[in-house]
Image (cartoon, rainbow, N blue to C red; front, top):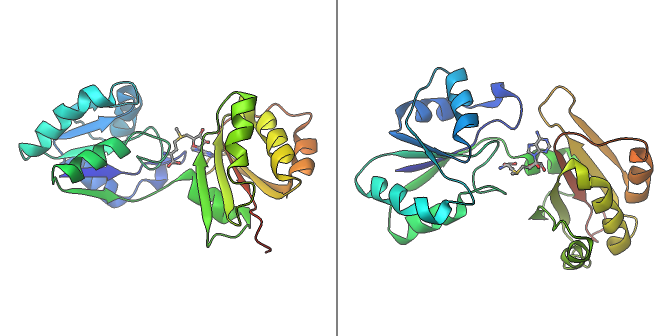
Amino acid sequence: MLYLIATPIGNLADISLRALETLKSVDYVASEDTRKTGLLLKHFGISKPQIAFHEHNEQQVLPRILALLQAGQSVALVSNAGTPGIADPGFVLVRACIAYDLPVTMIPGPAALIMALVLSGLPTHSFTFRGFPPRKPGKRRRFLEVDANSPHTLVFYESPHRLKAFLADALAVYGDRETAVANELTKLFEGVRRGTLSALLTTLENEEPRGEYVVVISGLEKV
Ligand code: SAM
């Protein structure tokens, strides 16, 4: 069985009982960063053989994980934070398990996009998650334009270094929409700032963004 296990996005107390039970019971833990996952496992007194499985070796390591699963071994897949498969490795492995008729399940838990969306105060009944926008301005604008007429709330992940440039491009493409910028969720300096894109850019003018960010932008639907 393959278990996709969600892990905390900051606060270690957010690990679930089932996540811990499953991590204790599996034969192998596949993870993006074996050092980081090693620290997480150690924190909870768990010791397991690990397999490095990240975006640069996914295709090479996939056959090994499939062979283990076919031999009846259990494998947990965790990412550095949050839900595997969400802006993190997972998709390719899940698809392969389905193709080979191998059982796969999930131990659900934290995902930064869900927490930010719910706290944004913007409509949650219908939303589009776009993950990380491209780094280059031209590509980023074209990426944003895809949803310019969407009625759905839009959710993005962004690095602190590109946050202001991203918000400026979003303002240029979407106009001055209601937006929420959530950072350091579940951590000591958790914050959610809400306002129009232009107001948020003004607020951030004299700030050097740090940490991890989710940006939630309203769609065209009237609230
Ligand atoms: N799999 C993760 C999930 O379920 O949310 C996402 C992994 S992705 C590589 C990392 C990005 O998620 C960060 O750059 C940031 O945009 C967002 N993120 C993760 N943890 C966060 C947190 N505690 N606060 C705000 N954003 C976070």
